[in-house]
Structure formats: C-alpha cells, structure tokens
Image (tube, rainbow, N blue to C red; front, side, top):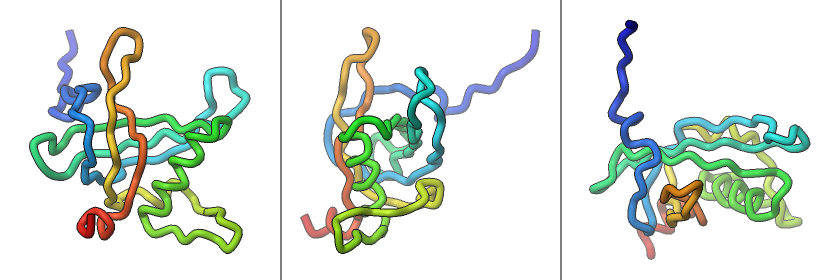
Length: 131
C-alpha cells in the first residue's frame, strides 16, 4: 500500500474557528468553472498568520454570478491595495493577490452538516491597526 503524508495544514482544513477578524495571507487565487459550467468561481485560499489559530487554512469560492461574491472579491482586492476607479469599480487580476496580507472577517456556517468558515469582509492591515 502506498504511503501518504498528510500535512498539518491538511489536518486543519475545514476546522471551524471562532468568528472574528484574522490576519491572513493569500496562498492561492484562481478561476474555475462552476458546477453548472455557466460562470466562474474565484477560489481563494487564505492562511491565518497570527494568533491561536495560526496556520489554519480557509478556502472560499466567490461566484461571478452572485453580487456578494463579487463584492467580497472587490473588497479583498482593495484590502490588498487595488485602487478604486472614479466610477467605484475595481479592476485587477486576482492571481496577482497571492502573497498579500490583509485581515478578513470570518463567520461560521453549517454546510452539509459540518460547521465551516466563511469570509464575510476584508480590510487592509493598516485599517486593522487603527481600529
């Protein structure tokens, strides 16, 4: 039988953490087709970088079809330094956010019988320090 190595991060994936603001680093951000194949999901992986829940991974799927997903992706971009246009829009390549640090507000949500982490908002680190 083949050996398998399960990392600490693998073991922590899906572990619900208490709702609050967390300092995170964007580990990955990519676009993939949704199940129906009629829109893109922006799959974003964060890793908590400080505190008791350091190294906890958080994955979110942000749909281009739903306003809340696009709004949150825009907030993540702005928290990473993307400038808002004169018309209130943001224009950026999500993959270029990898490695950036920010704060995200995490809540918990029941999904298929399991408590999961859900990112509800984002802010830059400078605002977090001032709050």
